[in-house]
Length: 198
Image (cartoon, rainbow, N blue to C red; front, side, top):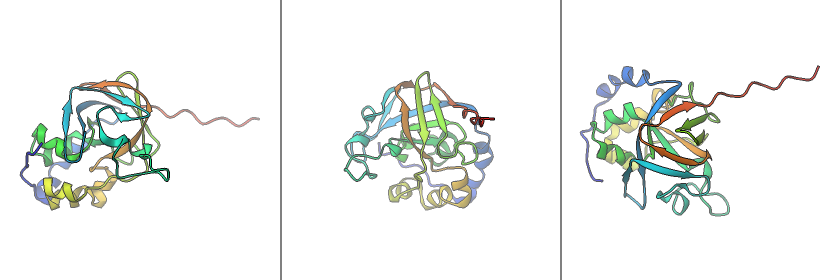
């Protein structure tokens, strides 16, 4: 994938926020699936298998990832990356190919903000897959700047951007299974607190 979108200005990015803030908060949709078989390679999928051991089948997370545990294995808290479809469509110019340049696995029409989906929240995709949102921050790197522009990188990492997790979130697969584009994305309700014994 080598599409190069037109870089938006800060003012243009600010104008997209009303649309982003209207993202569904309880039930949304999986809009795109991308895997990274190797460095700088992106593959768009219609469906994928998610595994607690290997992450998304076909993705390089298990063998080649930037976040490692002391034993050298890839950190499961960063198995999957998710990004809001509405902001990504804006900074990528609406091109599906350019959306893949972000490097995120799952593009969702869903509110990923800190208020709606804090660390520890569970997100269900399709019938079986459940992802636990990680505390590990997700920020725009050097390649993000090259692909979408300095203004986009600064915008998604601004105070507003961090509040709404515009760069996206990282997650751990706690429920494995298949997913496909068009699947529903839902928050898993938190269990009620245990009542003390009287």
